[in-house]
Length: 503
Image: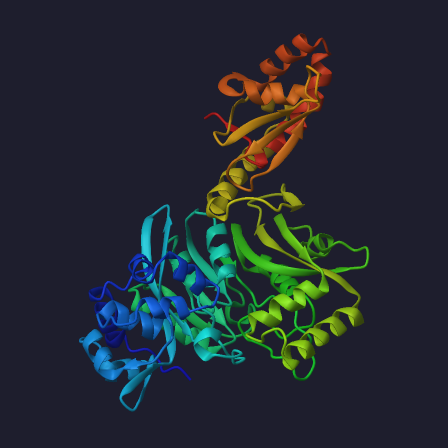
């Protein structure tokens, strides 16, 4: 078990890391961009070769905690003058092996930027499969992986009083939420994960994070939160002997029941206006859509925006998660695990597994006004959070307007929207007109000439109704009929971010 982190030792470690210049950009410069990309794919050889022959503090700590490799004790003594080797042992970060020091964990810098500015933290987590040279143990605490980075980039930037990080793992979501709220409660079924969360909070000087041990919403029963974030252990794992049940990704329930439990239960933990955001997998059974399954879990009392990014067939899904656990193709263990996954899916009639994002909100008053369940494959994840916040604000405003009020509104086309027209050879009129979104989810929307003309005219000057009337006159169609056709589509353009209210 990881020792309980001592605050004074964490402060000493932070001082040494800072003195060594142990930062993302410095490490990337030290071992090169190609080695950095290789490391992200679990290959540490190029980075290790780039650091050969260097004994400065950055290189020593990069080998020890960036790559998870043993280094001479004398080098660590020099690199950790404040913490010392003894202090690092007491924190559970290293073990001494003769004249060498072996890493017990990884400690990697993590840089990001949000509305409050640029930040870089050091995040401790368990040794990965590259450092272990084999499959992960079942109690493995994951560092900042792709899923956790995705969820962090999805988070709305709105502030609040308190937040819940459900299934905190190493604590990265709790740290991010703390920048938006005064107090964060971080929960997990793994006491080891909670100790990593406390270690990372102390190491980075972040207060206001309380950790609680327990499953799902049990540790916060009866409490409500302005924000909830969860990267739950959503991986669908066969419940049979011999298949590892990794705590960081396997919730211990059959199929997608863990994701269902999170979605079904989170409404009771939200304050009025509170928002919950999570990732998840959901199953497809025969002709039943996975998104329809999620819709049933949400129920009728919450605003919901559910985005499915991809659907994998059973074999592709099994291969993804068997490799994720460190079992390599071509081995007997790999084949056995793949067969276990496929047998489980066949027994339960699973034909595919969807992956996506879930945003739920408790309405301030009255019935929910947002119910979107859609498949969106594109987009740059860096802009998802601000984009979602912008779209939600536009939806909320439009939901209060009837068609007369909407027609009186002045709109402006978003600056990232472009138009593409496709012509058949020899024809003057386009056969296809597309509006394309450069940011957000990078949507492409096929439109007719009337809607294209309206969007093109939304320059923040004239009301929508006036523009529609002018377009109707130019096209020689009935203005009332054109309003009835275009105004519902204008609402869709607002919620998807193609246009916005001018004021």
